[in-house]
Figure 1: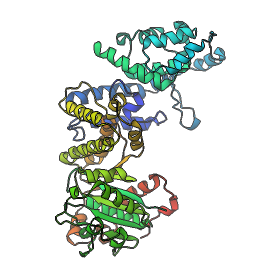
Figure 2: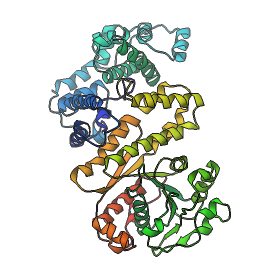
Figure 3: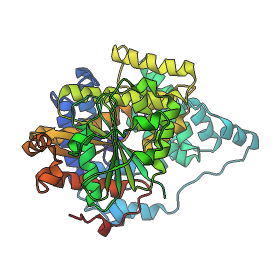
Figure 4: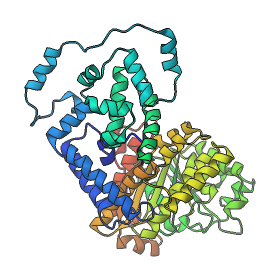
Amino acid sequence: MDVNSKYNYYEILEVSPQSHQTEVNQAYERMKVTYGGDNPAIYTIFSEEEARNMLNLIEEAFSVLGNKSLRTDYDEKMSFNSKPDGMAPISVGRPIASMTDKIKKGPLFKPEFKMNAIFEAEIKERTDWDGEQIKKVREYKNWTLESLAETTKISGYYIQGIEKLEPGSLPAPVFVRGYVSQICRVLSLDEKKVCDSFMKYYKKALERK
Amino acid sequence: MSAKVWVVGSGKGGVGKTFVSSSVGITLSKLNQSVLLVDFDLSGANLHTTLGLQLTDRNLRNFFDGSHKLVDLVQPTNIPRLSYIQGFWDDWSLSDISLDQIRRFAESCRTTEYDIVIIDLGAGSGWGNMELFKLADERLLVVDPEPTSIEKSYRYLEAFICHSLRENASAESFLKIQNALREYRNKNQKGLFSFRDYLHNATGFSFDHFEQLSKQPIRLIVNSTRSRPDLELGFAIKSVCNKYFDIPVDFVGSIDFDNAVWQSIRGKEPVLIAKPFTPVASQFLTICRHLLSSSRNSNFSANQLKAVV
């Protein structure tokens, strides 16, 4: 498992976003047993240090997924649908205001832009995507940092960090991948292709750091 | 309709592979499946002993030397719907059998008229075992709670992945992955290592095949568990495989350590027949029901899974 992979908190705890809270808790307990102590199952695979790192990731994941309101926020940020079978979860920390917010906003904002067939073709063909390339597409499609931040709910500071490939101004890699895929969706880019390529660059940037 | 081929393997010897093979076979037959057990443990076949049968002169060797068809070697057992093919243990070793022969063998198993053919592999990751493990429809990996057994199971999985990749990679890139593994073991590489991520970034591999492989989880059975932590071990191994190899492992269940088991082995009678109501029997029943219902292309309905005792 490395930065390059698409592990999010659910994948770290090996549960699905639809999992009931009790399943999440149980998975966390099991993970703690697996990576926490002197478990024979990790012997010869993970070093002590790696197990500690893993445990940190697990704790980080559970600090969010173990808390109902943080989990709801996280799902929203990462665009997960955590409602099992269309049932609304009993939400604790979410005020009703957020629902009315959505209604007020109306249809999703999408700026107008002038089609450029050559550039469109280039976007389609391109296989290597660093922050600079994402920025070019954003500007071509007439998204400002502010409007993109407003639509994706990712802070403009983070979007800038992604475009400049600055790990220093960004959170853990699992989030970064989530952000990039969200930006891709808004900019109508091939999510998987762009994320895979971007995370390679990002990994290098992390190593430099 | 062709038979499904299930293989039972383990990294270390003596963890109960043959016991699991025969017990799964017996339980499946109770679940109304017609089952053929094949003893492929060339290091010392003893499936006949766990089934309490006498040796005959017909054995798997007659298939590999070309003198008999596989179906001609089938022998009945005392258990309804359960047949078996005796193994052999003379001067042949796995390396005397060619890759072609292994493939023909797997194909012959598949074209029999049984519902399920269970191949009891020998211990270890010889390429013959690996090839059968790769070709099978269901892969059962038996491990016991000893650290040595767990360690060898990981080596087994590594060998399996490498074996599966070998024919789908250029010689050069195969060397690369071997080096990467070695490097990783020497802990030169920083951070956590994932096979799949590694392959994603490396060139020269056919990734599709690996994806295909990943769709079919390896079924993990933890045998002779004695304590509460032992029962949790399967989940831990599953998680490690997930995070390290990035291949899905389905922990299908633990089998308790049970005195009835060794008593019945000494009595040369399968424990599930001698003591049909031991907890072990119900553990196998749960495992087999799960395997039947989640096995790919299975056409078993729930009421078909009622045990016929």
